Image (cartoon, rainbow over all chains, first blue to last red; front, side, top):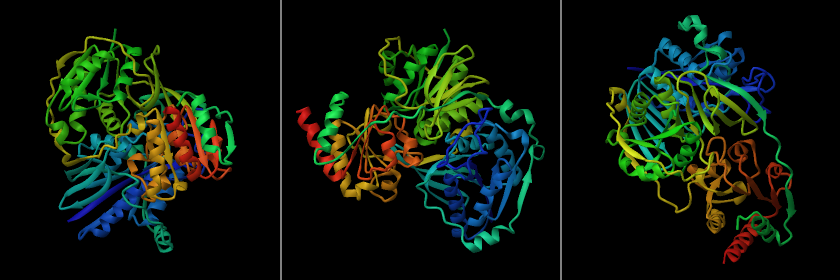
Length: 262
Length: 320
């Protein structure tokens, strides 16, 4: 038996860069370097571990929806060890919201064929964390999300979901949608050999017509939400800084008392 | 007046504070109608009524505890169909966002997550969010269907607003999709006796400078003297010094307390993303160049092993 894993990844502006909005209130992707969302590296890692631990054939496909540069994110995942990549790219996708993105991803996942979808817990730009749940809803398969541990055996996926109130063990039959957290295990660095091998791995490009999606279902116009204003948060006014010369704790206590915290 | 659905986060009938904050916001938009599910749901009514819920739709079934997320989605969908609300508000927990997203898709509505404020508008609720590691504030609207909005803790005050709180049974029939993901076991977290991190009025966090798991006792003692929650930076969590559930930052919790005390934390973007909307920020760090000092109202450049115990002692003395 073979297992087909599709890992969804996102190309995001570097979170350590100075991120801004463009004039149309979408994320400005021109002024900040982009990269594979750090939280998606954990998804790629878990897919590769499942592949390495399986007795059967496992094929790992990485899938992204995004502009031309998003190929960089796919390349990174391929150099980590994924087998092939799919890039959904279309000018009409500019400004697509989470609901629209989940439509495009779900259609592409169905077209690619899958037994297991693995996503990161959230993107590092939008940070909504809803796409895995939306994919499960659209694909009509179990949602096994926010796992800090995951394993696949005999057509069943199990994992541990660490919530605030409790830690839960989950179980579902394949096909299923999984998302993994940054606690699932550190992602590997691409090796030199991996980077060289990635250059030869296939990257397919699909557009909206390949997925039978109408342009008006996606993009800024097709979004079900609208950003009306975006204002840079004013810098915090400079505070008082003191150097501890034996009285730092006392001085801080006086400040807290003056602010009525004690 | 239009009705506004509020999804109730409760533990065996005890309503958690973020839900009461949602009732405050819901009253700005219309008449709050609460939806409480699972064991103890019926016991939420008194508390919800005191805070403005006109009605409490209740459904108790074993499925809510035995299967992940989807039974709650189906119940909320049934409530939307029964009430035809002007908006649906859900607490912005990890599970809350998943429930809200699937609900939105099912009812053909847009969703906005992690709101920090909400006002009535001519074309539906205007939702404020804090984005890009809190460097921007946006105002957004849902443009299709019934707005589904998840709201972060500490986004509104809890207000007493006595209302009927009338309990009505919600009719829910589960589809086969509801039972797709089985919860085979559940291990509740041990209570620390401290406030919930995201709900606390004061948070004391420790970072790399704390230097080891055993030294977090200093942070905990300071927190306890203030009745605060304890947080940790990613560096401290990755080092195994403190549990991930206490991580403040981009991949952990976002907190917005009245007072945030950062000890031994440099203030990298990853951490700032989780705390820079705090009202008052205080830092203790031995490095005068640490970026955290750009955010503070009051900062002490010094050794936390000297400053923190002195501060704790001072607080205890002042509180008598």
